[in-house]
Amino acid sequence: MSDRVDVIVAGGGIVGAATFYELASRGHSVTLLERNVVASGATAWSGGVVRIMHDDSESADRAIYGWRFYRSLAARGIDVPFHMTGFLYFPRPEARAAARLETHRLRREVPIAWLDEIALERRFGHLLADATGGAVWEPDSGWIDPRDVTRALVRAGVQHGGRLVEGVELLHLDRSEGVRAETTAGALHARAIVFATGVRTPGLLDALGIEHDLFNRDIQVDVRAPHEGPRDQPAFIDDVYDLNGRPDPGSDAVLIGHPTGLNSVSLDPAPIRPAHSRRIVAEGRKRFAWIDDSESRGGRRHPECYAPDPLARVQAADERGDVVIATGFSGGGLKMAPWAANHVVGLLADVIDPARSTR
Image (cartoon, rainbow, N blue to C red; front, side):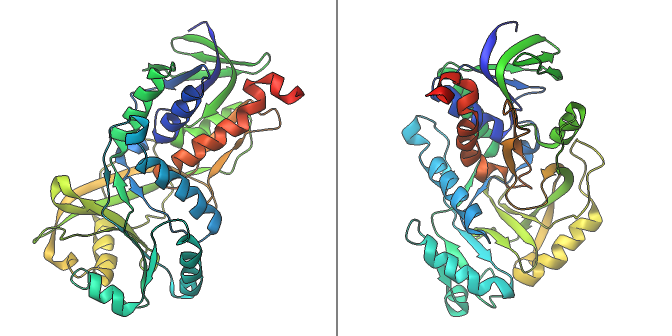
């Protein structure tokens, strides 16, 4: 580990994997450090939903980048299937007019439509308990297996010349001459380092004395199995009842979550809380007719790194530009990872190619 590289990417989740792949495929020398094994953090628990519609246009444009990337994996030689289940977005009543306008803007680039109450009832009435107000429909969106795609991107990065080092923890960072990363396996020198370290990022930045506004919050998603199966259930975000989820064909069930609103007390996954499961059922039955005719198949509860706003934090940590953070996606890191990786490469351009800044 005593050699030099252009970039160290710390964190082997989906954001780190996408960044590693992007750098390696563009010919940069890059090492991916993962303290455990690839796709073992929050990525392992992700629902993997890939969708476009957001409340703000900037997030939607970033999501389009990711949507196109995941649908182009086969053309990149990466064999991970994209499950095109479709996606429904239910905006809050006060946001419906804006959602219709945003749908009109986006439909010039991607398949997307506004379904009024009649169209929504006609298409999804067998699933819904409430079709009031309509919804945005994305027929070509869906989900991708987060572990499979993360591991595939790392393999592709290695094939392009990148190096993966697992089971190694970052201990200290010295920035006196470039970047010197002290790890449990020795030192590694680089021009820059990218922290795609998820819930560990706030602590790492605190140790470096770098100001930030990141925090960790628990996410709980339950697995509910309708007695008659998911029956073409699409992926969904429901801002009216604060629900999110997707079908889970492997268990013939549906993943369905509701925000916990609780800051994390641990960096590790934990058992689901029955009280929150009851809350998920209570809110879920307001939207979906099948909830009361379903049974619990358990669920997943884990911490995730949040930012105070929906745009996450993909930026240089300070004016030097040799430390970049890529985190704070608040549970939406998978769909934003391709955009984040491309943006990181742009942020590092002058640092990893010094001649560029003098051209």
